[in-house]
Length: 113
Image (cartoon, rainbow, N blue to C red):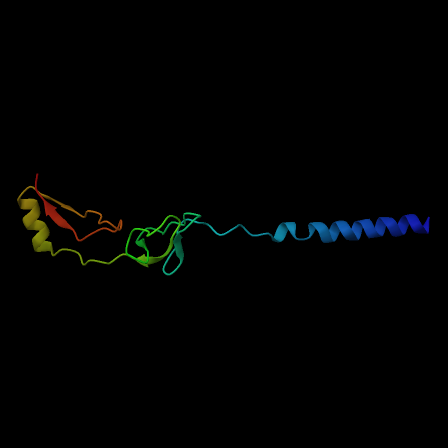
């Protein structure tokens, strides 16, 4: 009887040790929404968050397949003056900001169609 109890205690202790780490496991890091200075591109295809672009060794395009870069904040542009916006609207135009080759929004411009 003592031997059976010892085996059950050992099995219970082993099960407790085995399953104790299950609740503590964290999620793997996301490959999306990388921010300033974090890795982007590469074999896993890490993607920078909105407002950032991937800077590679030679610019915005990788030099070789699977090259990794670093996320860099897109440049910030000041808002156009109220007078510029009014003038644009008076001409029947719209204020638009196009994306550049990095995927960053450029300064707002008046487009008249």
